[in-house]
Image (tube, rainbow, N blue to C red; front, top):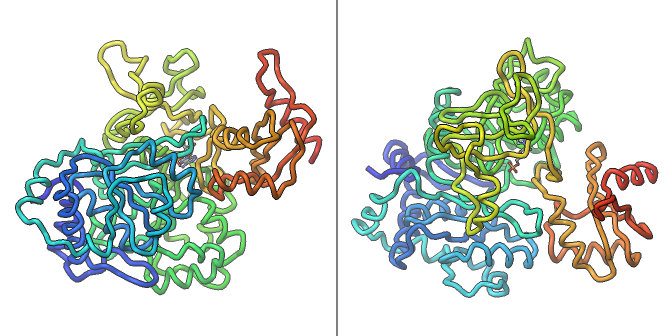
Length: 504
Ligand code: AMP
């Protein structure tokens, strides 16, 4: 019996060999096919002698990409999904941090991979997915797997301009799945409607949910999220019973009133995570789908999903949902500015402990030491906590209420962005002297304020597009002859925000 998450794949391949495990619009893979492909890819990796090393997967979003991830894990390594649409400069930075043992891609991406600042081994999916199964040799590798081993690295925005590689272990996902089983009655009849990009941890829920429950993951074509009626029709065609989406995807359906035209008739579990779901959008969904279960899941990439709240439709009308209570084997502590636990009901920084914690930032001991610390409120023995940077309080029912961020991290179109990363990219543009980003939460717009030389919007966009993914591109650029500074010489963001408001 194989251990770790690959054990779930083996079990489902045994129980439901011909059942579809992963599907996109064009293709699908059964559990048995996925198991065979994962073993073939695992055999290629195993043959190369890599153990517990990162393997980058540079492929489009499709069912085969998921099989490639599982193949990496099957070979005793951990995967890092890379988005082929990301600017080359940012990909190069990520690769220089990651230093992968190998990179998996397919023939359609060959030229793009050749242009990357990476000269390690390249494996082509077309070949490794049919590699001979090494049998006992591969089983010996799988026998060595422990739940503490790394499973994946996901890169998130970094305030210094260098993205952070969050290294997550198998244990995080295993405990999450055990919790999911206890909390929701999922079965092999379920169909997970995947919305999140594969380089986002929200899709971890879909991939491993499918493996664990013998269910199906349907990758919904990303373009359908701009055509909500088509989206709902597709969910019906593919019989989607559950999803975990970012609130902006649910908001889009509500804003365009798509349910007037079509209802997702198989949907039973509606889950959302990543940011606050506006009350009006939740009300819209509950009005049209009153029998579904609604759950607000919370967690930074560094803790995956670590708290959850299931909506009580009577009690929770007309107010934002709590983020709930810690899930299985996780615990929360709320610290004040002096690092002491807050009084009940007071606001403080949410710190998480338990099996939800990532192993740290890959090849970045300094950032790891700053965010994954020993709980200062426990003098008796060392307990590792992750400082989320989120401000929360506990309500009378013992549920956590999300208040805001402590820092300049924002959520924009569902993406986590450190404004510092945009500022670092902009500071490298010739002509810009000082710059700062302001986020207008109401208009959902990033504004880059700068001084130095006034530049054309188009020129700025072109220069920044080389370094930043599309979702980080400021929607507005504001030139000032001189940005305001405070007494310490830092840019006075409060004053800048006022200046912005005056301009509006
Ligand atoms: P990410 O690492 O992309 O998952 O982003 C993590 C951040 O998103 C958290 O630190 C929170 O600020 C925010 N977040 C995640 N889930 C929720 C939620 N359910 N409600 C409010 N904010 C959330």
